[in-house]
Length: 64
Image (cartoon, rainbow, N blue to C red; front, side, top):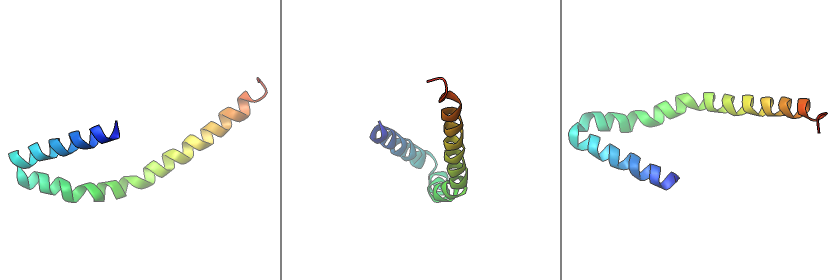
């Protein structure tokens, strides 16, 4: 599934490169910067998911 998504993304970028190459190059340069800016939010989401999973386990433990 992940390999198919990567191929689709690459083909979409090639179409963008043919239609408007400056925008495609800008997207290529900005992608790592945006990824680095969003990384703390992904880590925060993983931490919140872990805490909520722990709380769910603690509250459903007496029911088992």
